[in-house]
Image 1 (spheres, rainbow, N blue to C red):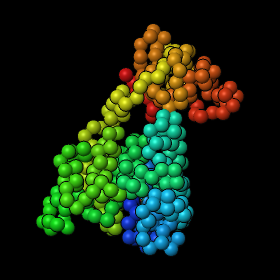
Image 2 (cartoon, rainbow, N blue to C red):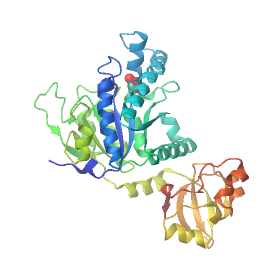
Image 3 (cartoon, rainbow, N blue to C red):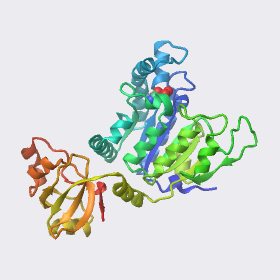
Image 4 (cartoon, rainbow, N blue to C red):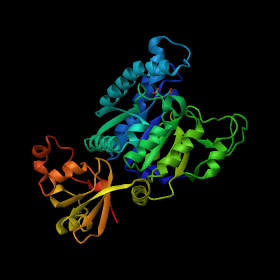
Length: 373
Ligand code: GLU
């Protein structure tokens, strides 16, 4: 049987949970990380852009601190995560570099991705790393928040990252083969779900049944993660992380685990997101040359094409792009706040640093953050 979810995917987020990474809490599993690193490197060499979202900091920290039982207090769990994160990224760094790949540590929180400016900063950093063929290894910033410690074991974070970078696919590697219609521990003949539509309410009922809970990375958080990933057009695969060559075989189109397919194509999902979720904060009026570049050539909006700035907005806010005749032609995320935009309007991008004292990006709105209306 074949599954197209990963076959055509160019940008892929791979999420691995604590029990896999740390071999059921016995400390970071060098062989497992070496094995995934080999596969990630092969995919990257094949032209795919890969982001790793990895848990395991708490489990590794507990081992380093000599704790045998997981504490109940969140502050202790957060302290363990701070200790363990060192070992976790050390292992990824060395195993990826053995494969000739560069890697980067990125620590994020849900709140970072809900804040417009931080969202844009995180997106910009990750896309820059991917363009340089660096593999980002992401974990929750457990020192400042504990959303994933309490609930998700990074399932939600994986989906938020898929949304953030508009991934084509999210792969959730876990210690189970995938999703069953009932709890296989209680019903040995439970039907295995090969493929379903992400966001189908029937899935939540199945996973919410006996034997599972929303706490710490059960099947329900994975199903909800798939639904969230589908919001930006990414399909999800839930598969057993120790399946031999699981990532390579999925990428070749083999059907492994459960595929939860996104109902909306990526571009349509992005447009919908811009239109629905974000309030319009202001506008830039652009000259006819800029209109033609955006509409006909698919280019970014540069400050040189901006002739007027309307309203007050911050970096990361959604603004309208208006022609001089007053027609709205696009919407996008502003790289510069309105005050800065007024200073750099009609100026060449090379002058931004001299005018502002720094330069975020050469564009007023980057093409990937812009939709024509
Ligand atoms: N971010 C946490 C970690 O890396 C989540 C997993 C957990 O709660 O054990 O360990």
